[in-house]
Structures are given as structure tokens and as C-alpha cells.
Amino acid sequence: DTGVSQDPRHKITKRGQNVTFRCDPISEHNRLYWYRQTLGQGPEFLTYFQNEAQLEKSRLLSDRFSAERPKGSFSTLEIQRTEQGDSAMYLCASSPTAGATQYFGPGTRLTVL
Amino acid sequence: AQSVAQPEDQVNVAEGNPLTVKCTYSVSGNPYLFWYVQYPNRGLQFLLKYITGDNLVKGSYGFEAEFNKSQTSFHLKKPSALVSDSALYFCATQTLGNYQLIWGAGTKLIIKP
Image (cartoon, rainbow over all chains, first blue to last red; front, side, top):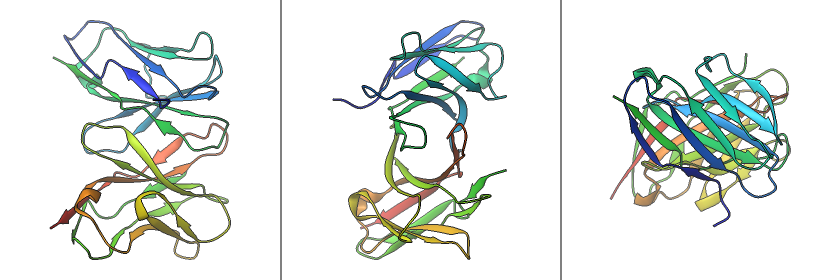
């Protein structure tokens, strides 16, 4: 399967714990996006990378959130000191170039107890 | 600021009947418009997009969408609905610059046998 993959698919954690999610984009896609989706809502943009460079972060992304794409391939999204409000589906998408169609992974569903 | 609106939370259609899922947009300049579908506990699947050219765009699974500049609409259509079309449908527009997707709230499509 050459689609976007995300790991884990589900994560349950206690408030205050740190969590890390991984996204593997489609091979050779240089753009990688992170979005967050809460129940009953459309996704909201969090951040994006062009190759290894993180070019923009949404104001939604507090200092507790950090994302990396160290070699321009896979990306990680870490949330420190999780809060119940962080419970959501975290979606990753990739595209071959700027403005091209974004293809999404299955998402990581985070539940913070 | 760019935005899209999906005025219907839910659309109910009998199997075999035509379906329409509505989307209106507010974009300065030429809009890039997309439709995605989301099945339960799954990521978003790309259906079709309008960038420029023919106002009628054909996409996956027999779906099509009509771009109407005067009405600032981009409604999703299918001539004959299938029960398997039941899902959550999202309209989105893409910003220039970082090319993030700005999403509507989604429309739940229910196809009844």
C-alpha cells in the first residue's frame, strides 16, 4: 500500500502525559500537513512541512505541540502535558507539490482521560 | 478570509434517486475547491476538485460537482445514489501561499434502501 499511513490508529492517555504520533507520507511527496478534527466538525489546519522545513504553524498549535520531519520523509507530532481538550482525530496529509491534491492518512484518534 | 459553508447537516435520499450535497464558498480571487468523503473511523478520501476550466467536474465513484461562479457554489451531485454512498461529505477550499485546506462542517449523507 503506497498511501499515507499513521501510527498509532488509536491512543488513550491520561491527562498530563506526553504522546507522539507518526505519519508516513506517500513516497516523494514533499509537502506534509497535519490537521485536527473534533467530532462533528471539519478538520482544522495545524502545521505543514515542505521537505524537512516546517513553514507554518496555526495559532491553534499551543507551545505544548511540536512537529518534526527530520529527513523530509516521515513526520512526528508530539503533544506534551495532554489536556482533555486535546481529544480529537489527528490527520496527516501529503501532496507532491504546493497546490496539488492532498491525500490523507486514516488518522490517529486521541482520547485524553 | 476564505471560507466554505455546507448549509445542510444531513441529507436523506432514497437509493436510486439523484443526490445533491450543497456547498457555497467565499474566496477572494479564483477558488480552488474540493470534495472529500469520510467513512466512519476512516480518513478523508479525495473525490474531486475544481481548479479552472469546465464548470462540471467529474470525480470518483460516479460523483460530479458543478462550479457556479455567480452563485459562489460548488454542489456535489450523483445521478443515482447507492446505499454505500452513505458517509460524511466535506467541501473545502485551498488557500494560496501555504495551500492549507479550509473545510466546511460536513454533511451527513444517508441513502435509504
